[in-house]
Length: 561
Image 1 (cartoon, rainbow, N blue to C red):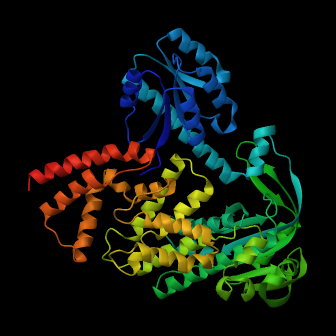
Image 2 (tube, helix red, strand yellow; image 1 turned 30 degrees about the horizontal axis):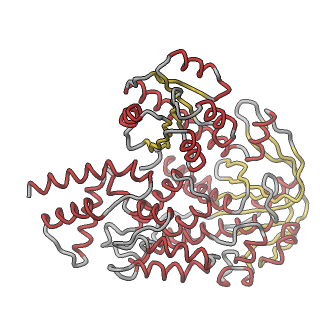
C-alpha cells in the first residue's frame, strides 16, 4: 500500500515547464514537491527526505551549483539522486561530468514523457535496492562493525569482558524433523525466531546466528547500553514466557506444541568478522562453550544459568538452585533456573515484565511502547465485536501503517512518530465498548492502560488530542493531527475504496444505520465532495487524485440507480 512511495523535489522557475514535468510525474507512487527558487528548495530539503531532485540548470531565480553542492556535502542528503534539466545539451553534459556535485543524470527540454518516467523509475529502483542492501548488511553485521568497514574497509577482532551469552534450542527437535512437513517446519522456526529477534532487538542485544533450531545471542559485545546481563536475563524470561504461552495454547487446541531450552553464562570472549566472501560476525572463547553447556543441561521451558551469571542478576530475579552439574570440558558448575523477575522489580507485580524503574536502570526507554502495542492489539483481536467489518483490528493496523509512512514522507522526528503511532493504535479502541461517539472512550482506554507502560501525562495529553481529531466534523490543529486524519481516511483515495466502503456500510446496517443504496451513494458523494479533505501535502499528492476518481465512479453509479 505504501512501500514504494518516494518524495521527489522539482526545482523549476518556469511555470509551463513545471506544469509539464509535474503532469508527466503524476503517479500514486510519486510524492511531488515544487520549488521555484533556491530559498523554497532549501526550505523543503530541510523539511523532507527526498529520493530524487530534478533541478533546472537554466533557473534564473537561483544558483543550481549551490543546491548541488549542498546536497552532495551533507551526509544525510548525499545519496539523493540529482537529475539536472536544461535546454542546452552542453550545459547538461558538463553537469554530469562534475561528479563532485552528485549529479547522476540529465533531461533535455522540452521534456519527453517516456524518458522522464524511465529515468525516474531507474533511480527509484536504485534507492530501494540500496535500502535492501543496507538492511541485509545490518542483519548480518552489527552497526559498529559496519561503520568500521565503511571507514577503514575492514574490522579488527576485539576482546570483550563481562559479556553475556545465551543459547536456545527446542526440545525433541530431531524427532520433529522426521514427522513434520519441511515447509511447515521452516514456517514454525521462522515464527519463533522472528519473535526472538523482536525481543533481542527490544533489549539491545545482538543475535549472532541460528544453526538448525539453535539460536545464539550476546550482550555487552556490540552495544553501549549498560547492564548486559540483566538485559539478557529479561530477554530470556520474555522468550521463555512467549514459548510457554504458545505451548499452552496449542495443547488446548490439540495441536503439536514446541518447548524450549535456554542456557546463559557470562565472561570474556573475542569478537570479530570471519570470511572474505560470505563473511559473518562471531564470538569465541570459554564463555561461549559454557553457555552452550548450560543450554544442553537445561530442561523443557527452563532458563538454566551459571553461578557467575546468577551473581550479577541476583538482586532482580528469583531462582531455583540445581546444585553442581558436571559439564564436558568444564568440570563442575553450580547452576540455577531463573524462575522470574522479583515482584518489586516487575510491572504490576506479576514477575514477567520489568517495571519502569528497572527499564530505566538498564538503559531502556521508560515508556514501553512495544509492550503497550502488543497489549492493545491483543485486546482488540480478542474483544472487538466480530460484526465490526470495517472498524476491525485490521483497520487499526492499516491506519498504523499509513501513519508511519505519512510521518516518514513528512519527516517527523522519532518522538512525534511515537505519539502518532500510539494514537493510531487507540483511535478506535472505543469500539470495544460502544458503536457511536466512541472517541472519548478510546481516550479513556489510553489513559487507563498507558501509565502501566510508563507513559507520562504530557505525552498522553498530546495523544488524546490526536485521537479526538478523528471525530466527525473535527479539524486538525497541527501536523500530527493532520497526519492522523489523513491516515484514518486514507482508503478514500485508494483503489480498494469500494470494497472498504461496502464493509463500512454493512457494519453500519448491523448497528441500526439502515439506508437504501441510492441514499448511501448520495451521502457518500456529498461527504467526499463537500465535507472531507486531505490536509498533508503527501496525502493531497498521493490520495486526492484517487479520491476524485472514486467521486466520478460514485456519480456514475448514482445515475444507474
